[in-house]
Image 1: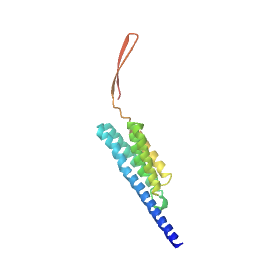
Image 2: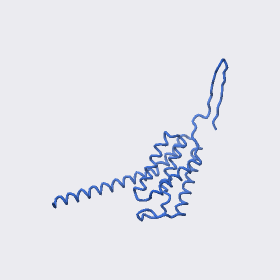
Image 3: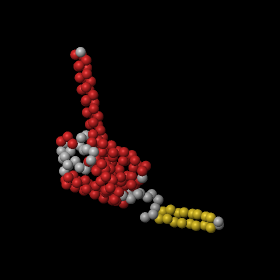
Image 4: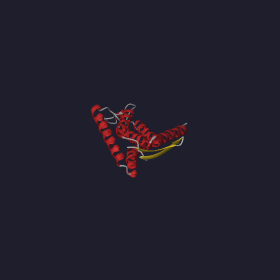
Length: 179
């Protein structure tokens, strides 16, 4: 009986430690995304060399931070489990969703779906770490997406297009330029 109790206590301690380690890994992974996603979004515009995209990202980022921080101070909602104050909205979530929305709006859903998936993971990691609740994270996501959509325009690779059409012995040449 005593050996069984000791064994069960050992298993309980082992499982508790494993769960704690996994929660720390989730929180750390989410924290890495907080910096990686804006770096990728901004870096993509710098690599392409299209400065309008850099400016669009910067304006969206500044508006996102201003709205998020302004609401945090205006509302001053306490965090769950007495983990501090200024919980609403989630700043981590608004930053990652602003970056994801920029990537999606600028380069399309092919890149947007993975970006939104990573942003959603970041939001979940904040709830998992007991830093936010179910109201803080969606509010941060909405602010992030909205601030990015205000300024971001789709990236156009081909600005000029030459077209040709013929019918019944008639020929038409066209030229399109996208601004």
